[in-house]
Length: 197
Length: 121
Image 1: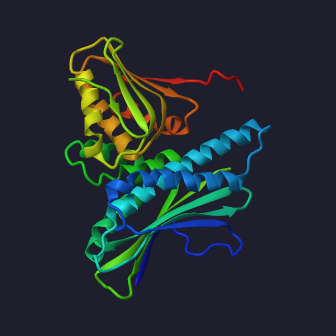
Image 2: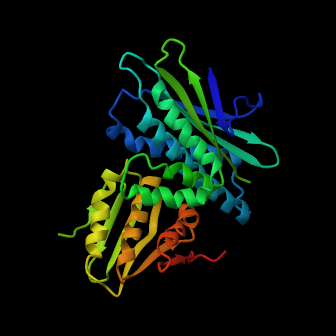
């Protein structure tokens, strides 16, 4: 049983480039490794800029590259922060948080950034409801609403995903997949596609 | 007691005379609890009615969404104040071009100044 929401890519062209990092969430506390999220996001963004390539004499290209790199850093950091924050599995299980980027090159370059973590199956429904809301309403209005709501209730505001959609014009998608050996947990992958040039 | 806040990758400096709080570096704390001391510094700096107060972000190169939320909440809190809030950003920092204008949605009187690079292109 798997479920897809929004713009999710499950297959990629055979000759495309990609980079994937894996983290063991239990190896260090979230607090200790928090900074690692941003550093990993930068790593992926640097890989992106190498992939696109620099043309020092072309100012427009350099500006687009700088903006693309910043977009990848921001989005990758948000997805990884969420994956680390919401990863929830029994102590006995040993799934990694997967995080990475794919590139799809046509006339334009699309960076496909993703993060996979494990959540308890009983958390799927509220998450799905939130995704449905995100995909069906005016996200600019929802952003205002969520920030104002967060004055009262700080946690899980969803502002990160909304900024990815609103400020970076990214298309978001989700993939829920069962964990064969344990029905109490499932994998969730959040994916953001952003077209750069 | 108002004081500066210095972290591994960032500094937040309060200039009481200049009614300015300036952010430097890269900021991606893990959530609203971790941002609370910074929000408190901003709230204390604006606790008295001022002619104007400046939030200088032009050397803040990275801010995650939890940080954007913290700034937004501070800005919402300024609705009840008569202090003119000025936010200084940089045209050269992509996240600021993308996200800083959102602050005006919460406080239309906020004056956003995006400084251009000294280098002409």
